[in-house]
Image (tube, rainbow, N blue to C red; front, side):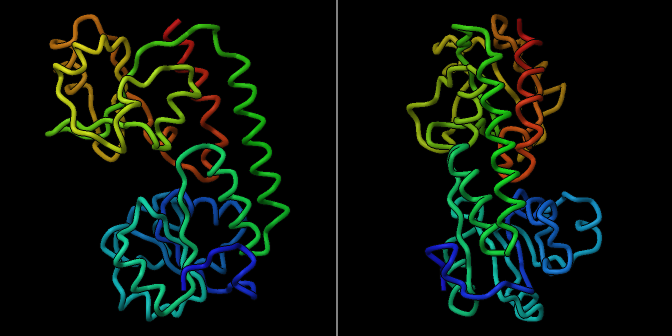
Length: 259
């Protein structure tokens, strides 16, 4: 079944599988070492779990047989990162907590919900509140009227950008930047000519899912001579678990690089 409230499970899970990298790291930071029995191949944090925990496939290529062998009593998935049909198949056999995180408020609620599900409510509340305060301080540090027109690329060949309604869009906004593709949904394909005509002042090239490198920056710089282009840590813009603790300081450094 797909759980609809954090209190619906009715027991404290002892065998958890996470299908979402940022939420795997959250389980670790909530102290759920023994309870977490399975993760995906993309769950790279923490390093010890990445090396030692059983892998159940990728976020979009779940291995049902491996999951069955682990006998989970809770599976944690995400609406965007996992495949609907695979989640539904798992939910027919096991309790599934399906998260839907599109902004900071969603992320903080997700942290609290997982804390409730796993009997780590106090730890989760502390974590969520500390993250909230860090983002408040980030907002206070921002330079007034600092609204660079910005695009954030996640993919190459074709280029794909973060549009409106995404968690990345919310992080761009919280940096004080203005996403030029905010009116487009999800992750639209974009052309360099669109960046040119939109007057893109700042172009951010993410480290994931496509690992942009210096050569990609140089290639785009030739086509966009009036645009500042930076390579950025994609985890800071797209991971919505406990890694959010590090994001405000990272964003503050990024902003000051542009002043």
